[in-house]
Length: 439
Image (cartoon, rainbow, N blue to C red; front, side, top):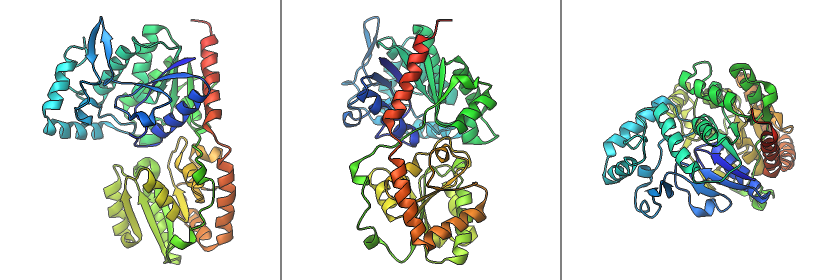
């Protein structure tokens, strides 16, 4: 089976769980014998994409024999010039801020790309769309050009920014469309939804032959908020890569410990992730325990307000902000932690708790998360219940037997979650849409 997959991030260029999920899923699919062409609006190092064929605006494609984008021609251009500035968790405000920055930079590389885009028959003649909506449409047009050069049986689109592309390609080729929803606009924005994003999500969910949701929490949102038939939505849980180096307990853990306990928040510092609840619980913990440091690792639109909030609470000296971490730095911060806390307000799934358990760190997660559906040996709390959150943090830090039990059982439990199982479930979805009669 051949799959044309549409996405916005892939290792090593990731800003959240979407890229990690795409990597794990496509790798497992490849092992099962599937052929995947991943359309991505940014270049990817071959060492990270050995199991899929990568295609994007920087890859050679032709219309009527005319070459539009040549990889050798673009080899010396800056990454930004050939990239889309869209990101999976980006809103209109963030897009406009990046656009302003790009306009100030300018440069020859931008002009070179402009000249190349001028020949793309209907594609905008500037580097990027004037706004978020136009940028999504620009990606859809480029993806459609690429799709004309590929052979595939089914289109698989990840999250709302690729849905217009998926709809266009499916309409052009007659191939069935499967949309994968990792996060809804209600997860990202609460009740203050961006109507444009909601409309695109709803159109994609209704057009698709089948919908894949990362949890029953997300499936219920899709059914109730977007009026999608629940029978059309298949839940496929995310998983975690199992590297042998993470399977064993770190024997040196005690030696790298200092007198202070470490409680870790790792993720985007944005409304969806509940950083304010983490800080509120931290203040309550510090009222009864002084030898604790709270580490907030990540970036996001609420970083500055969160720093100011910690200072206003009088706990600024107890809260450390690391900025965005990747690779070995993530593993290092996990090895320092006594407890990982994910107080998300609305978390469709949540891969970070699995990473924590893989690194032998006990976890405390909000009940408003998809991962709570699959983890038994994890402490769970309503995101708004800061008293209970603080009580459970104190319990783990003060009682080593509880911490050890959560580590051992959690580490064992996470081994049951594997991408091959998720990939097989996706294959079942593909089989069902290909077997369905044409309307």
